[in-house]
Length: 247
Ligand SMILES: [Zn+2]
Image 1 (cartoon, protein in one colour):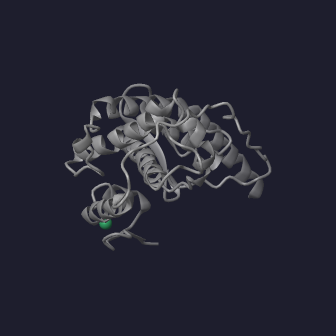
Image 2 (spheres, protein in one colour):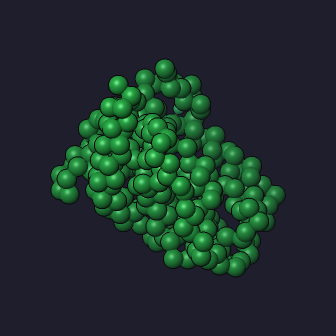
Image 3 (cartoon, helix red, strand yellow):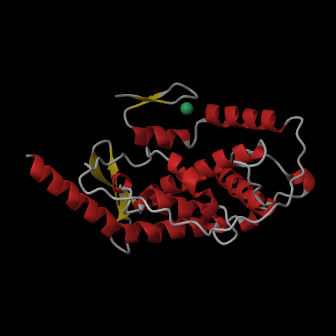
């Protein structure tokens, strides 16, 4: 199966390699930039400093059906649509500054979604990481895996940010400081890569990436990945038992 970049049509042998490419794909950057400019054209840049979202109903329980077969998903190819149910949690006052690490936690470290327990750090120190990629567990440098997880989270943040830019998000108003934080995080990463900002808010003095601490987010993801080893090992054990029954 070949994995093609939807922006420049280059083909890659694995989804992992395609993901790596898309971090730098020039066509993707240009197309996204153009979309943002279109989205903002003719729209007021003023934002209502709206009501605060409370994270009261976070723990929506997902029933774990033991009889369901677990099929691991390749790292980086998860279906993130379930996160739309978690936006109250991700974008509340308490959590918004850790949005990418919280996304990593929800996507990869949840025992209730075993098919996505597909990445962990092997030892507390050192750089050994393991990820389930294209049908097998492979050893990769943990920094690279963390970068990928961070980018996955930030790509999601970017999608949400674009949705917000068209107005309220599912009828809710996202407070301005949270929107600014999201944009700063997106732009800081672009800056680190030498890419132009998604939107340059310099003209209204809103561009301040100093609060967007990408290093701190990555450090949190490192810690989550190490803690996730036990979750992943339990899932691997379940899959082994499952296969033993089938054989
Ligand atoms: Zn491309």
